[in-house]
Image (cartoon, rainbow, N blue to C red; front, side):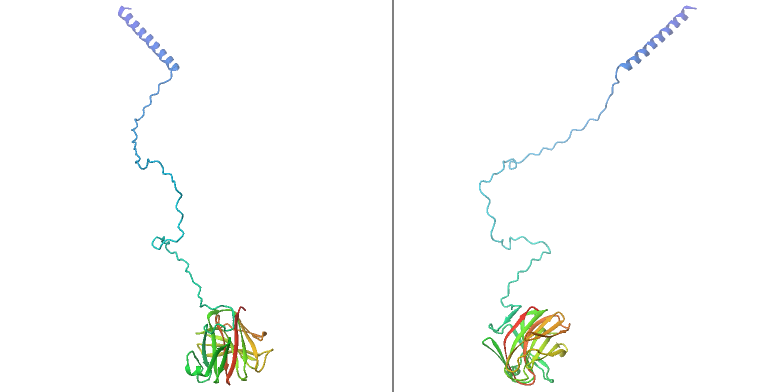
Length: 299
């Protein structure tokens, strides 16, 4: 072998030796040292800080009261300062008591006059058959006077009925009574009225001085007397004497009492409510009768 070839082989062997040595060193180093981790982070922007400075008034210490608070007002505010109510609010109206309003249930002995009663005259003759509220000629034929708490009636013409209607109240169910004193004429009669309606009519109980009674429904629009029933009193004071008549109007029932003795109940549904009153009548003769009292009560 020549010299150059030998040198070349030696150089190759040395290179292989160095290579094997380098690989062994790198393998040992990997098992003994942890890997280095490089973390790359973005650089955050600096936050903006807004600084608010308080005014001198806000930095002032709180005020401590040295006197008690003022007392609340005892009177309502004026209309100009009063708060406005919400939309749709409707205050309840104040209703003052009317001194002229009549009582609902009472026994009237007429000590306070007749101002709470309306009156009218019914001419029941066939040719007339009409109600009169103001008629001077007919008023002259009927004398009505209040004397010592008693109403005195003196009717000086046939076929005239004088009505007195209690004005202040309207009733549905009610019981009415009247005391009547007959002073001698045989054809005199008295009546009680319930559910009186100026436009519709009324119910009427008529009692003669013989104790016979008749019950009617008067239809005002038709000007027609509708007969409902009749009967006789079981207990009655004849001649110049005093009797008590009672009519109870309750629902559809009309009940008749003479001197507190029940006589009959009749059913009718034409009228629902109305005013009450009484009447003195001269069907076939002059009439002189007194009314000491009139009573309205619950049925």
